[in-house]
Image 1 (cartoon, one colour):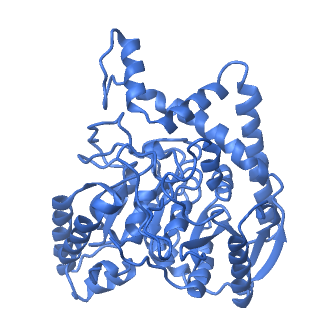
Image 2 (tube, one colour; image 1 turned 90 degrees about the vertical axis):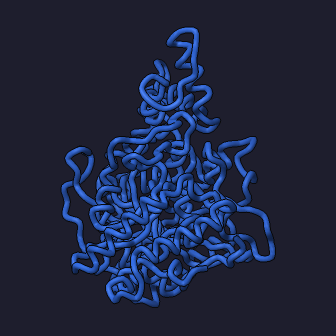
Image 3 (tube, one colour; image 1 turned 60 degrees about the vertical axis):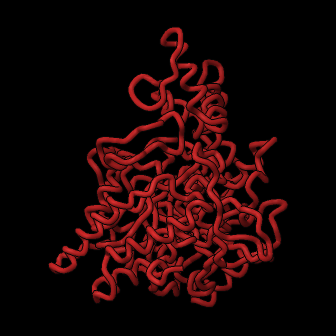
Length: 492
């Protein structure tokens, strides 16, 4: 590992200010390790080396002039779901083949306005539909972690697997990601990184390829809680181009990191103790509870009675919105076009060739639950369940709970090709602890908390009040301080 690529964002900021190294030297160090590791990890779809160097040179000029901004010279990876002007933006799908937008997503523009450097576009599950990063048209991403003594490739989680793998392997200082049902928190948990899904509306969705519009939310994946706070500070904003973005002041998240949690009430929901949950996850959860007690927080047993309905309701609402959003990909305006005998034949052939198996499955499910005769039985009922899930959380927070502590995933990372082959529900169950935050629009953070018997990272999740990400950073630091920093033994 290059010494520079091992620095956190907070340390990069300090080192650049002291002139210990230049932004160009830092960028070149990252490009060197990407060149060596990416053929094995497949985290980057596209590396924008010259663009990165140009941005780094501009950062060095600003630093020299005393005009450094919040992320000046910090090299980031960008999930392929974010539109980046003139650069490959294809959502991990063949149907957007060759698409290079003429505009920049609001979030990436916010990052560039704060001085960040783009290293390239990161691999992901196609249209963010997956929990393992195996559905990408560009092939699966490999987790830099391996079982102790083993050499089998493991999944990094999904859909933001490229982001998580790149951050864990130190192929970028931090990365953008998105979370529709757990796609930030689950891959963060599988790779020993920190991932936060902010409150729905905290970050603009403009310029992000849509999966399920009422569930999608962007956030960062980083190495530490502090780094995640620094990144979210720059990503979050109100946006007139996205009417679902909230016009609520973005607090100083970094200031919250390290603040005492003494007197804070941490809720522990009984419904998250699932049948068949591995003992290691249960033990980790108990350990987290003890860490908070030791830090002076009060532990309160709570109930979220509609939790058991969250996953089935999510897999109705998500596909329904996906079937609508993905109707625009028809081969007429942009992306892939497969010739046909007439326009209907062209539509059918283009979509058949352009979409992968999992995307087709979800579009079919979504179209079915929205169809005449089934809309009330499935979609309307799922939305009612969603309201009940949201009400559960509101009642808990109204009772004085500051944050809710749960496991992040039902297991550590598993092998590529191990799950979901014959039964896709087996893969969907990976989202069991994360979908509730999306269904209710609440913020959630995954923080590395320990390792299983095979030496693989495991994480705990904190769910917070609406627009109270600062409390999650404050509480998340307790886990990080107790558990320490995780880095995979280098084999790539």
